[in-house]
Amino acid sequence: MSGHRWRQLVASLRKPGAVCWICGHGIDIELTFPDPGSFTVHHRVPRSKGGDVLDRGNAVPAHLRCNSSLGNRPLVRRRRTSRRW
Image (cartoon, rainbow, N blue to C red; front, side, top):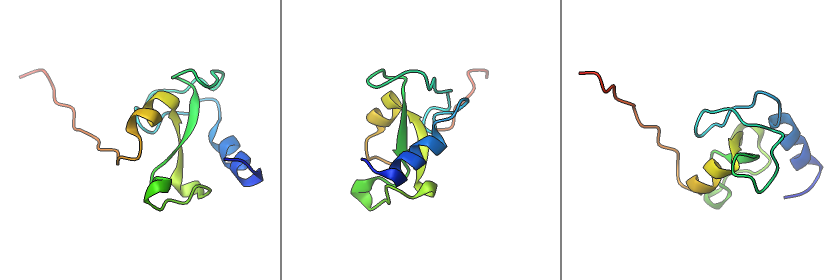
C-alpha cells in the first residue's frame, strides 16, 4: 500500500497510547516491522471481502502478531468466564 491517503490514514492511527483492536493491549509505536508487537493497520472488513482499504471507519490499530494471526476471518469476541464458582 502506498500513496498520500494511505500515509495519512496510518499517521492518524499510529499515535502514542494506541490500543490493539484485536487483543486490547497497548501498542509500542517505537517497535518496527517485523517485530510481532509492532503497529499495523487492521481492516474490520478485509480487502478480500470487499472492504475499502482507505476508509477511516474500516481501519483500526493492531499488533502485527494479532493482525497476522486473525487473517481475513471475522473477530469473534468470547465471553470470559470466572474461575470462581
